[in-house]
Amino acid sequence: MDERSLLFTCQRCGSCCHGETTVSLDESDQQRMINHLGLPGEIVGQRYWRVTGRTVQMRIVEHRCIFYRDGCTVYPGRPWRCAEWPLVRAILIDEANFTAISDSCPGINKDLSYPEFCAILKRLLDAKEADQGPPG
Ligand code: SF4
Ligand code: SF4
Image (cartoon, rainbow, N blue to C red; front, side):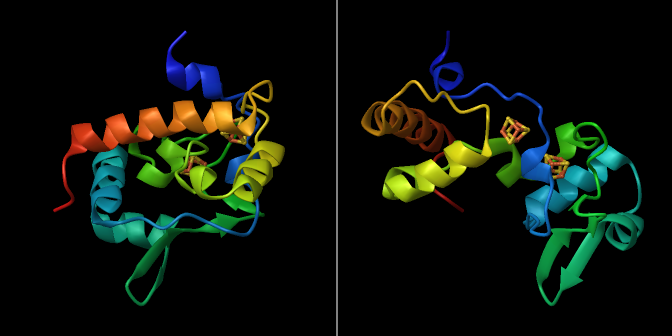
């Protein structure tokens, strides 16, 4: 079992795609989504995004992400924040974050203690950042 699977296995419950909060898309996310959908950027923006000033987010329809329909319908083109969820660095900062995320995501391995979980997560995130190199 790889270390990521030790921490988390998605149960495809859809809980993280529901609610009134949504995910912001940076410029790479926007381009990836446009490429994946194969539509002009203007159409993607009109159909799927909520643009507030410089902030671009996915639209929420009937209390869920516009792309959610028995699963993510834009999976290869989803934003990086969706791809990293729920193994986020905020877990390392505060146990309360871990508890909140663990309570809301049935895919988190509840058998690990907080320190055990953090030790593995830190290794994973540090390795990922080292692969990606410095920002910019
Ligand atoms: S809440 Fe967790 S288990 Fe459910 S779909 Fe989201 S990531 Fe997967
Ligand atoms: S893009 Fe996909 S994974 Fe992200 S919130 Fe929408 S349906 Fe969920």
